[in-house]
Length: 183
Image 1 (spheres, helix red, strand yellow):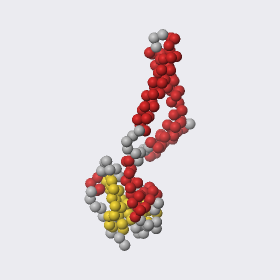
Image 2 (cartoon, one colour; image 1 turned 120 degrees about the vertical axis):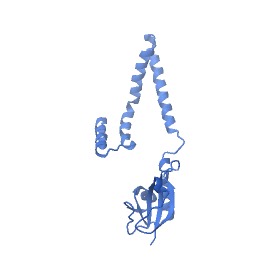
Image 3 (cartoon, rainbow, N blue to C red; image 1 turned 90 degrees about the vertical axis):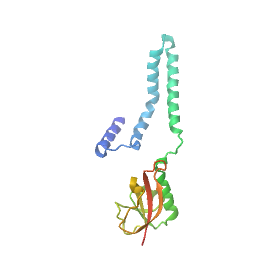
């Protein structure tokens, strides 16, 4: 099963040149059951290297196993015990979806580059490429990067800026802006 999944990851990398953490998660789940076996093998090896006499090898092996397990648990605890929430890098998506849900009606059509925002806001959305707004769109959600995030951009129809938020408030690199399409 692990070999099959490694082949799938290799093909994903060859075809799309992109492997995400979520693609690697199944292989971590499959191999997680081998962690205790690996700890036992490593503890046996360390006890043979550090033991002075042959009688204390078993007791020394148990001590090494518990030391290695404690180190592993402390690393995992430090990883899970973080200050920032899990989705802090994409807080802008949450804020934008919340604004759309509270300030638009369910019959409004929203043009956007990323359909996740429309899904989270529970609104109808349509894909938008570039600055060309679809004919029946009521609102436009646009991602602005770098210098463009500070300047205004032009569309093929008249719009009015209604809401703006940084994708990540700690790194002001990408801004999400909601425009209302004027009739």
